[in-house]
Image (cartoon, rainbow, N blue to C red):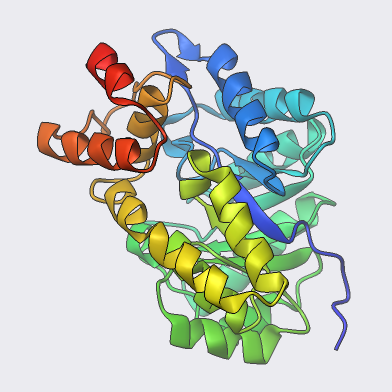
Length: 306
């Protein structure tokens, strides 16, 4: 069955960190990061998602970050704006703002903290979809929100005009398979976990919204291309090869490790907003060693950074 709507992207979308300075968003570093991603061949960019620390940014900063990314990208890939919130009125405002500055699509996390019912979930997404005319990717990350979307509920959400995709970050490949079986002709399905990219592709997924591609965009794209070219052994080897790094990127709360890695790679400062703080020293040392082992930084740069 053919999809009734085109995909926002297929392949690798990077869930960008948001570089901060002491005064706000560090746009010089943000531009550097965006260009690094584009040179790495990614297929889309996500701004103001979980990895972008959107929950500690003001509405104005979120609008401005999306606006800057759209202008920096200049149409080379889709820019997807994270616009979810626990208050649906705020989510609608963020969505309207993002569309107003040129976002290609929206990534909308489930309403968090309130623990919505099935009916409330459907009405919330319908309310947001009614405010905008851009595609919406539903973002399910129950470890953060306290709400888990079931496969049958995805089928219900697929009836809402404007909802075209799913970022599934519940870590449950069985549920992903069931969602693919129920909604494969209705929704484009994306993994929200780097370590599940290959399994998700193998059961009908179309790509990943990735944290790891902040630092290894070329390798993530190579994995995807190997799979779609039928080079399954190569794809499996690539997936296994990045597993140690992926583990370290989640040894503390995302985006602490990935932003720390970008600091050592010379892309941005390791500056966070509370309640996020810098990495524990022992974990940072392990991350640096793995970055050196992967050839992403060199020992001399490590000493200079420290």
